[in-house]
Structure formats: C-alpha cells, structure tokens
Length: 184
Image 1: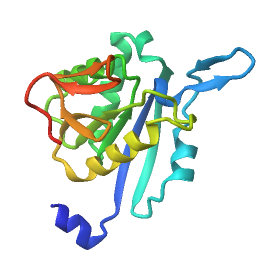
Image 2 (image 1 turned 120 degrees about the horizontal axis):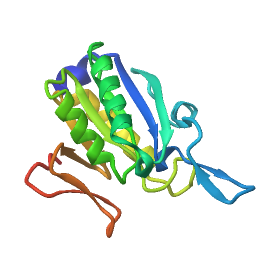
Image 3 (image 1 turned 90 degrees about the vertical axis):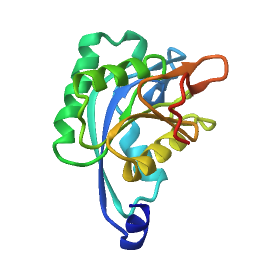
Image 4 (image 1 turned 30 degrees about the vertical axis):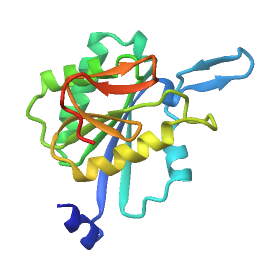
C-alpha cells in the first residue's frame, strides 16, 4: 500500500475535526490567559505546511478544554466521526490531551466498525507558541492517516498507539501504551 501511494502521487482528502484543547488555545494579552475561542488550525496549517497532494477539510465541532468536556460532547464527536467516515476519507481529531483517550475510547465503543483511520492528536503547548509540539503532531497524524488501516489511534510525539490501552503520562509530557499495542 505504501509503495502504491508513493509511486502514484495519489491525491488525498483528510477530514480534520477540531474540538479545542491546548493545541488551539490562543493567548489573551489583556487577561494574560490562554483560551479556546475558535479553531485556529486552518490558517496555521495552510501557512506552515506544503500539502500539494492533500486536501484538508476542517470541521469545527466545539472549542473547549478537554477537562470541561462532557460525555454528551464526546458523543457529538463520535457521531461526527461516524458521519464523516461515510465519505471514505481518513479523519484526524484535534483534541485536548487530558481526556483525549476517553473520547477516542467512547468513539470506538459507539462505532467499533469504522471504515477509515481515525487519529486523535493534540499538543502540550498551543500551536502559536514557538516551542509548540502541535505542528509536529498534526503533521505526523496527517501522514499516518494516509497509510494505516481503519481503526482508532492516538498519534503523539512520533508514536502511534491503537485505542484503547493508551494514556497520557503527565510526568514525561506525552502518551504511552500500557499494553503491547504500540505500533511505532
């Protein structure tokens, strides 16, 4: 499959679902705080990445910190994933890291027979910060979405984890597997 992609310069469409979280927070200079207000990913991705063979479609579902997310909001994300999967294009979900695995696990529980790769990713620092890991994580998720089989994953810091059995390790500031489901 990978050789087919490389040799054919195949055109891809990838749906990105935005939900908020650290990756999309912006700094309010007057209050000195970070906020989720609206998606900031579209302009920043288009300005910083060259994607001549990839069409990115942004679907802004909500803009909240994942610690404030309810199960009903997680279900909305799951329904959006299910709806977009019918288009047969991979899906990348931008999500806050604190409860990312909970949303990914619920989406998989609600829609276990997904027909496309669904990759959750986020960042430890907002996209607008110079030392942010956001662009790296989004880029890696976009690449993985084009070459992995249909299922639910978390992509973070050059690792790809199959959902479930993945969690955030706050001590080291990344995700880890707590079983043998690490793919890379």
